[in-house]
Image (cartoon, rainbow, N blue to C red; front, top):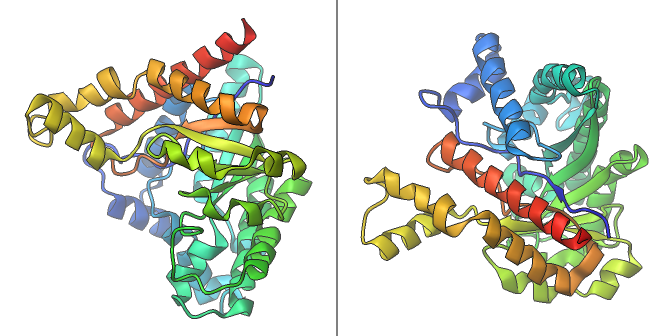
Length: 345
């Protein structure tokens, strides 16, 4: 059996005194680079320190807006939505390269990183809504390929282990008007380059309802939110995964913060939004390393070595603070490591 690798979704709460709006403006205007870069570097290093095996660049911006804003800016394009490759840059990767360089100097090892981009379907829905313009859909997929090409060019001191397409709408949103072959084509356009570079390509879904069409593309890892919805496991056919040589990334710690706090409120008869000390119950009593390990044990009994990666269900952007978010990441790391050790015994 291979060890299960711990990756994270990318997004985090902003530090105290910093808003997502400020980060967006600073990233676009480049007028406070040192403050912006410092908070990104610190968050990325903390991910490494709490035990994320393959960390994602810290994301403090809206996933879709981060890419669509660049694509919609005419000065970045040859013609509307046709992005010039040299303008398809992910600022955060330039920032974390410095952290990766220090990591290499300290450990002698090259850091492996996960790069996340918006998926073509989610990007399209934001840009054009429900009307199906097939050509525009595929142009956006090629734009995403340009971001991925630039990401590999940026990676001087780290190795891109995973490229993730964020597609939570796929299988969940009834506004999608494209036929399955169109979706397969767009996902293939967005993922082919990264696979040729030897990286795994993950698609982050909330539900695996559409997983079989993903198995027809170069994408070789399907990510689902198993921790909050264990029944998603029942939707997979292990033979389909094996026949297409597709793996799974399982969410093994819950990130649905509103529901988690609701459980705390009911259990302890408090309002944890006001009595914030009770929020610690999420990581001390609920989403513990032991809980993570048990979830993996149950899933492994069903999917076995088709499970290649594990993570929190989703990103942590809307958690109350960074300390709680990093505590969840640390618990997730401990739970995954314990499972890996257990399987070797």
